[in-house]
Image (cartoon, helix red, strand yellow):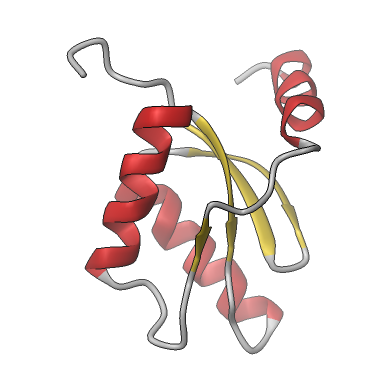
Length: 90
């Protein structure tokens, strides 16, 4: 994704609230399913990643991006912004 487009996405996501929050069990299939549904419906979402330290958050963020085929737009503290173009079939 081009830097200009990423900047636009960050600005667009500024007013969004997290739509999915990871629980104490981490990245479960249910959490991944909710992220997938939210991305399909909204394309641009925020996810709150509850992890004990920065390294755990980075690992969980990488797993979410890989499993959901989403692109990381921004990560600030516990909140990450993800983008994935919705499929035309849905």
